[in-house]
Amino acid sequence: MLVGVVLLAACSSGGSGTGNTSTVASSIVESSTTAATREIPPVVNRYIEALDSGDIAAANAMRCEKGRVPDSVIDRFRTEVDLVRTAAGGHLVIGTLKLIDPVTLGSLYGSRPDAQVAFSLLDPAGESSLVAVAVITEGGQQRLCGNMQEGSPGVQAAIAASTIVWNEGTVGSLATALPTELLPGSTQVDDAAVGDVSQIPGALDSWSRAWSTADAGGLRVTLFRMGSSDAALTLAKQILQTPGLDTAEQITNLPKGYQGVSVVTSAWTWVQPASLGLRTDRAAGVVGDVAVVVELTGEQAGSDHSTLAQVVQAIELS
Image 1 (spheres, rainbow, N blue to C red):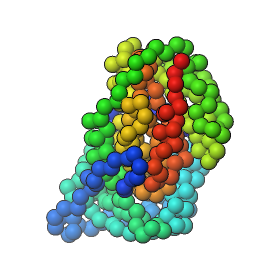
Image 2: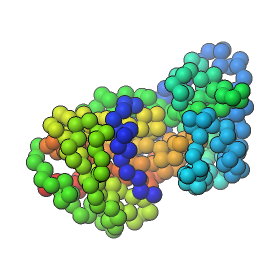
Image 3: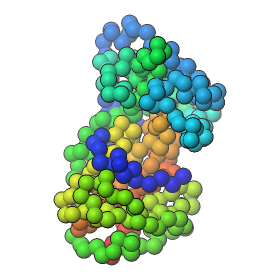
Image 4: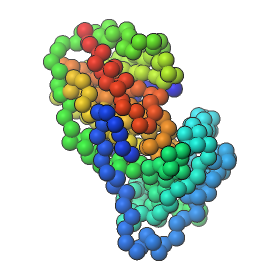
């Protein structure tokens, strides 16, 4: 499935890998006797059991109002739950289940939840990485209200400290700046101006081109003309930080001084661990006053991100 850059989110801050990745140890830490003596909220088990049985309506009712899946995308949500279940070996079965204390995850409302619970799923390799969920009381019922991937705060800190290298150059019309092919065997499916850049601070113009790829994934490259090279560098870094707590890995050693992140594709299910299933790889770089954003969908957890590096290497702006 092809996804584009989340433009509005780009304006906000927000397992182990191989090859050119660097990972940061988990920030999910179980503490002291407090966590051991408190009861784990039953809603966590019930939510996962409902998703495993295919009762999407029941699971959705266990999410807080702010985190509830709209009817318009409930079929897509169901499909992505199915993908996570398949990646886990056919069933969603909890491995590790524990309270996290002190709480480090805020609810979607920005408040401190009643509890933070971390769990793993049993998978064909044994046990997945951890996912943490926030549990609140709403309408007199326990409900889940936000999640966090194991290690994502540390990865985001590493991204914030990273440097995107400025590439000298003058880019002409954004509509014709990109090559028509970046991956052999891909098929172009979109080529158009981004209609409204008013929500991107400093953006003067934008163009996006997308391809479907041979492995049923998708590739999208979006260009943002900024008012200066400094503004382009700032935007590129913001876009890398957009995924926030859904970030799984930092991708380093990309060509041309680009930096990248690997993001859990179905994080909105609140049951996909970073070590299982599909990822979206994202890279950002700068040429002159243009920020370049690459999104590659359909990547599997544990990939070496070599396809992302291949695309970045192939990008020559005219």
